[in-house]
Image (cartoon, rainbow, N blue to C red; front, top):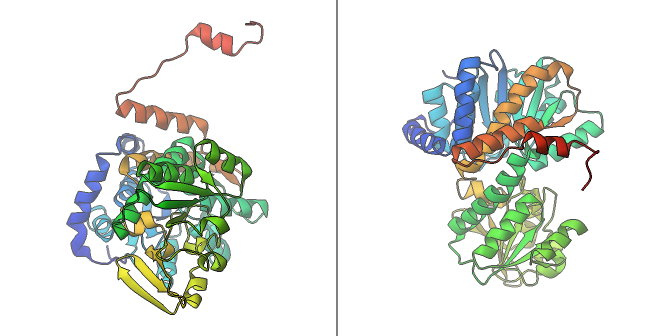
Length: 419
């Protein structure tokens, strides 16, 4: 196989060990893979996947291939690729990969288009870049596409906007909306891995610091909890009064970002929106402030504005850019404003991604079975898939739950019996 672009094929053996280690923590996906081997539900389906190229993703690619899919993988973020994993997928699984950690924007889109040259029947996105590129520049591919799946909040937002405008040309399953995805992946995965990335990049003590979380969705909830657990004093900023009220009731300080910047030591954006930290915020930040992002795209931080303000920019540690301002203050951006949990660390723990990628695999199967009956809109993961993944996860943990008796079922479904 010569249709790939990776950093170093010699890293393949190390990548295989990393993939196998992750597989130990992914029993749900493993059980799906074993069924897929027998049933081959994706036989003959070409899949283009634009996901973070990690050991967990590698196990998803292996599962899809076991189900008969012809898979190609490209990175959904220039800094999230694990080069040894990419090498292993090419060398040991003969899955074409187009991804190199640290690739520039031109190479990123070159790789994305290389994956689309595969002429997919199905897309698998983390941020909707594949879908967006197809609709803007590769419309010749639309005729053969039966549908797609989307992994993350930002991508779902973009896809729902496309559907509302009547621009979406094929159905997409919002994997992110499954309870076994966003509740666990976003809350527990993002919470832990973001702290991991910040600490690896900076080696700072979080205890006693003012830790500002921009956005109190599922990711923000998890991050705020984990930061408090490390001893930080957590401040939440929000635009949604319901989310802000929840943060207050959970014991966090809530304030406007324009007030938070005056006291914050560490800032993390997890909103999915643009310019959450902007020029007027940088102008009022404390000397030494650390700024990171765990939302999907680096647009949450207005880095071009900060670069215009700065007299000098220096890389002071791996993944830490220091911006020297005219008034003597120094601000620090981690991981170029990209996902810090993948730029400086290894992303979510495999046991969390086990459920997320089980949703991906089963949603792909659902799409193939039902493509002829689906409209061109965004669908939630069917509840029966969500519950089955939860059941499998509990089973793998040797945890058992009760079942309703016939009497209880009748009572819950009847209006005739009173209290």
